[in-house]
Amino acid sequence: MNVEAAHGPSVRRQLLRPLLWVWLLGMAAAVGGAYWLARASVNAAFDRSLQDECTALASRVTWSDRGPLLDQTRQAREVITWDVEDRNSFAMVDADGHALAGDAGVPVPARRGRMTFERPVLFDATFEDEPVRGAVFSVASPMLDRSVSLVVVETRRKRTVLLRDIQLGIVLPSLALGALTFLLLGWGIRRGLQPLRDVATEVSRRAASDWRALPMRDVPAEAAPLIERINMLLADVQHSVSLQRRFVADAAHQLRTPVAGIRVLAQELQQELRALPCGVEPQPWQPLLHQLLKSSDRLARLIGQLLSLARSETALAMDEEQAAMDIVPLVREATESLVLECVRDGRTVSLIAPQSPVVARAHPLWLGEVLNNLLDNARRYGGRNIVMRIGAVEGGGARVEVEDDGEGVAEAELARIFEPFWRGERADLRNDGGTGLGLAIAREIVERLGGRLEAASRPAVAGMRFTVRLSA
Image 1 (cartoon, rainbow, N blue to C red):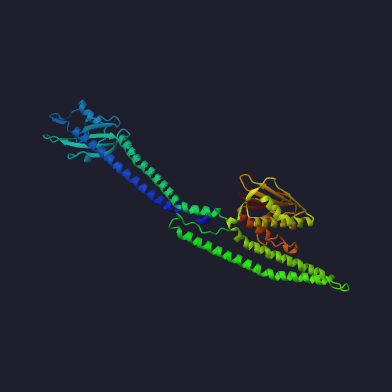
Image 2: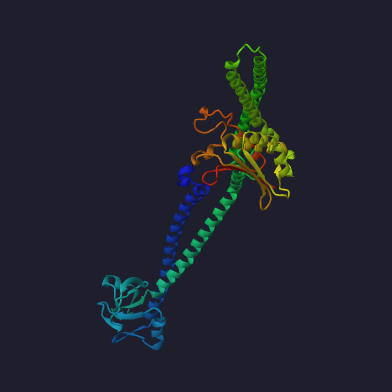
């Protein structure tokens, strides 16, 4: 499943995405501007040098009776050909474009653009299959009605290399600075959102029944209204659950008296029927009275379980009542009466415990309630053999197992056995006296003791096994 499809993009992505587009557009504009500026600057510098060479060469022209002469001494040639990286050539041409001196293959601009007397004029051409940049400058004879043009050309090699170096010098630092900026922005946004992740981590570590207000420390001001609203919802849920538990406790408490009265009246009626004279036959009433007493016992047990479920939260919320203790004698004492009932029912109950103390954090009263509920569940729904195991856990803590060899629970239903009032399929046809609350109460108590209650069934075990894990 796509995470973004479930809850939308992250805040960091929503912040960085528009900044990325702005940065890309700015980078494109910067690169374009840098390219244009570098090209203009490089061309201006080289063009100025080319014009100076052309002017210097024109100053070497002398006039005689035979016509124009160009000083081609070694020093004069070095002015033009001093650069070894670029290829430079020159020529002196007449008004018709015929070469009078220099390289006859040097490209000459058209006649219209060839005669320039004020300053050298630049042009682009191709010389020996290589693009060149040229300058042309014309000089006239002070006495004769004649003029010549000096043409100087050079290749673009140094221009290209220098332009590339300038562009790389601008673009690469810009890319590095942009990448560093985005890394710093991402780090800053992540750091700003860290308090929200801390709140989420704390929520994930809490138990399902922990409704304390979320911490507001270091929460960004923009997220403070959200956390405050969540805290209000938590307070409302806690209040609603508290009212519900109080209602259940009050209702169960109020029902105890009439149910106890019904049970007492049924017992008295049974005694009176037994005291009838021998001539009266009370047998037809015996099954009815038996069912009435059994139903009243079941109703009394259900009310007791409801009271335990409602009171366990308040009792276990007080940490000072929980302490590290040896749970072996606690288990023996808490389950003694129920073990005797199992034996009377024809079941075999075994307790496997080490001789050394097994220390874990527990509450004597409520851990006994857990073990009684688990043992009662094994007595009602398990097989003939029940085994209780107590052992220490490596690193601290304890493990208590209650296992039977009964039919167990189907794998599809195993996850529901801790739901209140769930008793399996067609529970209405079973008359086992169960209430469907024992396992729910056991899990509630174990979790409030800081432990876990796990269940396993066939084929992993012989029947059904419940494991209570307590912390140190």
